[in-house]
Length: 314
Image (cartoon, rainbow, N blue to C red):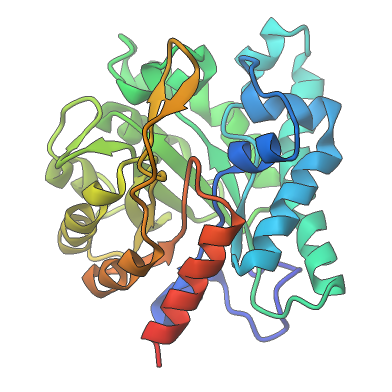
């Protein structure tokens, strides 16, 4: 599937990965916060789907203009269960999930109007079960649910997001190989490619499984066009890229945090950034083909990443 907002010669995303490197956007939440929006709600950025959708489109536009090829939608924390806690019924929840894709498409059209010429795609974000809980368990996994229960949780919103026709489904910030197994089951038959991206600590998932075993789950999944890591420390990326490429033979996706640490109790970031955009050339040499940033990585850093990748390609 090729985005209707790509340049006329742009291939499907999977084809683009075979030909070169694609730049992802940065953190949605930090871009919204920098624009003055309060995200101290359990729905996080998903609350703005209902209250300030134009702010989300503006955030996507900022990243497209910064050099990103891919906008990751604001649906990470958008779930039927999370919406229900706020009195939002299932029909409205489905509308908001679909809206997250539409807003990214709108931003791509605005980018075209502003003279952006590089290929543009939309990735629909599917966060882990723990994101709905909003208690920090997305960084731990091990929820006490079976693979079947997790599959039943994820499948309905995956169906809605797939029907909105994104270019790819971003199964992201997955802390646990068991949840990855559930997500891989849930994307079968949807007709939209996906990437699978773990949140890691060192050479293991956040739940403690070896990355070799975690990545191997996706090796034979036809729906999965890339496997990798996100929402992790920059220093954890390079070895994870090499492992993912070796185990799966697929292109690798990487988008780490700035290097600051999240305090779930205080709901605040601590420390300083260790993210250096020039690192991305090493990641590409190890097999990364989708490269961007996650939490606390903004448009300026994405411009630097895009520049570093262009220079390295000469």
